[in-house]
Length: 154
Image (cartoon, rainbow, N blue to C red):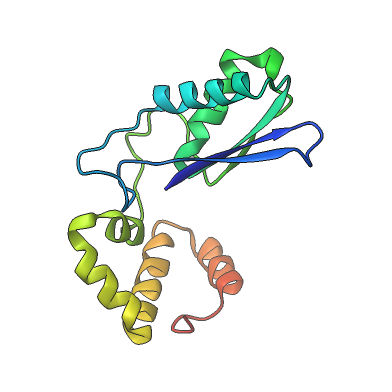
Protein backbone atom coordinates (compact mmCIF):
# COMPACT_ATOMS: atom_id res chain seq x y z
CA UNK A 1 0.00 0.00 0.00
CA UNK A 2 1.29 3.45 -0.79
CA UNK A 3 -0.05 6.48 0.92
CA UNK A 4 0.14 10.20 1.27
CA UNK A 5 -1.47 12.61 3.68
CA UNK A 6 -2.51 16.20 3.28
CA UNK A 7 -1.76 18.55 6.15
CA UNK A 8 -3.65 21.78 5.87
CA UNK A 9 -2.88 24.73 8.10
CA UNK A 10 -3.67 24.45 10.95
CA UNK A 11 -2.22 20.97 11.26
CA UNK A 12 -5.25 19.91 13.32
CA UNK A 13 -7.22 19.89 10.05
CA UNK A 14 -5.63 16.76 8.60
CA UNK A 15 -7.10 14.48 6.01
CA UNK A 16 -5.50 11.08 5.54
CA UNK A 17 -5.61 9.80 1.98
CA UNK A 18 -4.61 6.39 0.77
CA UNK A 19 -3.71 5.43 -2.75
CA UNK A 20 -3.72 1.75 -3.60
CA UNK A 21 -0.75 0.44 -5.54
CA UNK A 22 -1.04 -2.43 -7.94
CA UNK A 23 0.87 -4.69 -5.51
CA UNK A 24 -1.57 -4.19 -2.64
CA UNK A 25 -3.32 -7.46 -1.72
CA UNK A 26 -6.81 -5.97 -2.21
CA UNK A 27 -6.06 -4.53 -5.65
CA UNK A 28 -7.65 -6.27 -8.63
CA UNK A 29 -5.30 -8.43 -10.70
CA UNK A 30 -3.45 -6.34 -13.25
CA UNK A 31 -4.36 -3.04 -11.56
CA UNK A 32 -2.13 -0.11 -12.44
CA UNK A 33 -1.87 3.15 -10.54
CA UNK A 34 0.54 5.64 -12.06
CA UNK A 35 2.27 8.61 -10.47
CA UNK A 36 0.21 10.84 -12.77
CA UNK A 37 -2.98 9.26 -11.40
CA UNK A 38 -1.74 9.79 -7.83
CA UNK A 39 -1.09 13.46 -8.57
CA UNK A 40 -4.51 13.83 -10.19
CA UNK A 41 -6.21 12.28 -7.16
CA UNK A 42 -4.33 14.58 -4.79
CA UNK A 43 -5.20 17.64 -6.89
CA UNK A 44 -8.88 16.62 -6.97
CA UNK A 45 -9.05 16.32 -3.18
CA UNK A 46 -7.32 19.67 -2.64
CA UNK A 47 -9.77 21.35 -5.03
CA UNK A 48 -12.85 19.56 -3.64
CA UNK A 49 -11.98 20.59 -0.08
CA UNK A 50 -11.05 24.13 -1.17
CA UNK A 51 -7.69 23.87 0.58
CA UNK A 52 -5.38 26.84 0.09
CA UNK A 53 -1.89 25.74 1.14
CA UNK A 54 -1.14 22.18 2.10
CA UNK A 55 1.76 20.11 3.38
CA UNK A 56 1.63 16.88 1.41
CA UNK A 57 3.22 14.03 3.35
CA UNK A 58 4.37 11.27 1.03
CA UNK A 59 5.14 7.81 2.38
CA UNK A 60 6.80 5.05 0.35
CA UNK A 61 5.55 5.10 -3.25
CA UNK A 62 3.24 8.00 -2.31
CA UNK A 63 6.33 10.23 -2.18
CA UNK A 64 6.26 11.15 -5.87
CA UNK A 65 2.68 12.45 -5.54
CA UNK A 66 3.76 14.81 -2.76
CA UNK A 67 6.82 16.01 -4.71
CA UNK A 68 4.92 16.31 -8.01
CA UNK A 69 2.18 18.35 -6.33
CA UNK A 70 4.78 20.73 -4.87
CA UNK A 71 6.54 21.09 -8.23
CA UNK A 72 3.30 21.73 -10.11
CA UNK A 73 1.65 23.89 -7.44
CA UNK A 74 4.35 25.71 -5.44
CA UNK A 75 1.87 28.47 -4.55
CA UNK A 76 -0.39 25.89 -2.84
CA UNK A 77 2.42 24.02 -1.05
CA UNK A 78 3.60 25.20 2.38
CA UNK A 79 6.15 22.38 2.72
CA UNK A 80 6.66 18.74 1.75
CA UNK A 81 7.38 15.83 4.06
CA UNK A 82 8.73 12.53 2.72
CA UNK A 83 9.02 9.29 4.67
CA UNK A 84 10.82 6.28 3.26
CA UNK A 85 10.17 7.66 -0.22
CA UNK A 86 11.95 7.79 -3.56
CA UNK A 87 11.66 10.15 -6.46
CA UNK A 88 12.58 9.96 -10.12
CA UNK A 89 13.89 7.11 -12.18
CA UNK A 90 15.71 4.69 -9.94
CA UNK A 91 17.18 2.01 -12.21
CA UNK A 92 19.48 0.85 -9.41
CA UNK A 93 16.69 0.69 -6.85
CA UNK A 94 16.79 -2.64 -5.12
CA UNK A 95 13.61 -3.49 -3.27
CA UNK A 96 14.31 -5.54 -0.12
CA UNK A 97 13.41 -9.21 -0.48
CA UNK A 98 11.00 -8.98 2.46
CA UNK A 99 8.92 -6.39 0.60
CA UNK A 100 8.99 -8.41 -2.62
CA UNK A 101 7.87 -11.51 -0.74
CA UNK A 102 4.95 -9.88 1.08
CA UNK A 103 3.77 -7.80 -1.89
CA UNK A 104 3.56 -10.74 -4.30
CA UNK A 105 0.03 -12.17 -4.37
CA UNK A 106 1.32 -15.41 -5.89
CA UNK A 107 3.37 -16.04 -2.74
CA UNK A 108 0.45 -15.64 -0.31
CA UNK A 109 0.72 -19.22 1.04
CA UNK A 110 4.41 -18.70 1.79
CA UNK A 111 3.70 -15.31 3.39
CA UNK A 112 1.10 -16.88 5.68
CA UNK A 113 3.51 -19.66 6.61
CA UNK A 114 6.17 -17.15 7.70
CA UNK A 115 3.60 -15.13 9.65
CA UNK A 116 2.21 -18.21 11.41
CA UNK A 117 5.62 -19.33 12.66
CA UNK A 118 7.49 -16.96 14.99
CA UNK A 119 10.71 -18.92 14.40
CA UNK A 120 10.40 -18.76 10.61
CA UNK A 121 9.48 -15.08 10.71
CA UNK A 122 12.48 -14.35 12.98
CA UNK A 123 14.72 -16.17 10.49
CA UNK A 124 13.27 -14.08 7.65
CA UNK A 125 13.85 -10.82 9.55
CA UNK A 126 17.44 -11.79 10.33
CA UNK A 127 18.00 -12.73 6.69
CA UNK A 128 16.70 -9.36 5.50
CA UNK A 129 18.64 -7.50 8.14
CA UNK A 130 21.86 -9.13 6.96
CA UNK A 131 21.03 -8.40 3.31
CA UNK A 132 20.50 -4.70 4.09
CA UNK A 133 23.98 -4.30 5.55
CA UNK A 134 25.70 -5.68 2.44
CA UNK A 135 27.94 -3.07 0.87
CA UNK A 136 28.50 -1.11 4.08
CA UNK A 137 32.00 -0.32 5.27
CA UNK A 138 33.19 -2.11 8.41
CA UNK A 139 32.61 1.05 10.47
CA UNK A 140 29.07 1.35 9.07
CA UNK A 141 28.40 -2.34 9.80
CA UNK A 142 29.45 -1.89 13.43
CA UNK A 143 27.09 1.10 13.78
CA UNK A 144 24.32 -0.78 11.95
CA UNK A 145 24.43 -3.71 14.37
CA UNK A 146 24.92 -1.45 17.42
CA UNK A 147 21.72 0.34 16.43
CA UNK A 148 19.70 -2.82 15.66
CA UNK A 149 21.14 -5.03 18.38
CA UNK A 150 22.79 -8.43 17.98
CA UNK A 151 21.74 -10.89 15.30
CA UNK A 152 19.19 -13.55 16.13
CA UNK A 153 17.22 -11.35 18.53
CA UNK A 154 14.19 -10.93 16.25
